[in-house]
View 1 (tube, one colour):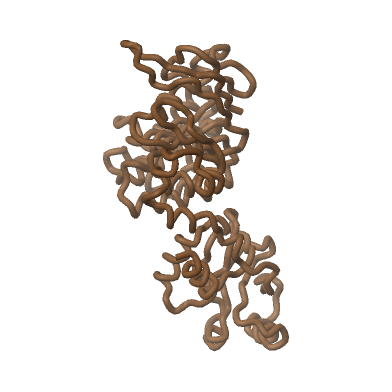
View 2: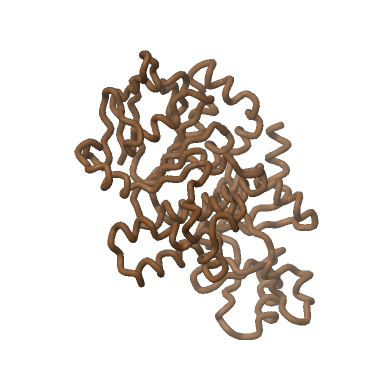
Length: 366
């Protein structure tokens, strides 16, 4: 989808921003550009959408040289999210999101539908936020609007420059979690810049490590963590190596699959059906799903005694892509729970994982 061949950028005074970059970002892939400040990450990203002109080399998008596109068409084919959001202060949230669709000549009804669906997608109620101005939003809310704006015209490519860097740790974690869910749904080709190695490992399919304008190593997070190419990469990993090694193990690698479930809509007395399953299948807990296998809640032997409903609808679940680090945080917040449903990015039940399995993996890797 995006291919760089021998790309070099030289500024005035013969200062090299990047030198001889050759790599590609595949269609549907999330690629992180990672490295220390000044290594050329942002310059590389900006050359892809021609905010910065390259000095020599070639960049192709969808098999076509970027200089064969009109600059307007090229940029409108790419969503662009930056650290400090860049919302237009005199426009409402809805108008900020609709800028590119309006320029593309979309009908008003289509734009309104798109704005509403995107606000829901990024976790903002359209009735509450559509008519607000950027100054009336928190930093995290502004960043959500920035992501919605980048996706407004449904571009195949999304470029993100330190998208969560200016946020507080809690909001940043929330948006990272939501980004993981979002990227599973929107199926875009994504290139994002970050100096945070943990963020890169968590969010990216592959990482391109840069140093002093050159590409040092490219590969999956596992490739880079387990086989760093040189001392620079090792030093970049060293501070967070323990967390990084744990981040390689996802819940989908640890969960019990093919679990016994209860389909909520099948009719009959729900409590009697649960009791029968507990007795005949000898299970300790019973996930409840709908007809599409989407997780709804959990039944435990204790909740069976509830006079209203045996289903605990707010019972927490982990995602298949969640790491041991994220799971440990969930354990800490729910100290009385011993079992956790594991769901896909679409919310479908995929398995169960126990507190014991998570803690054992953690202690075995200390």
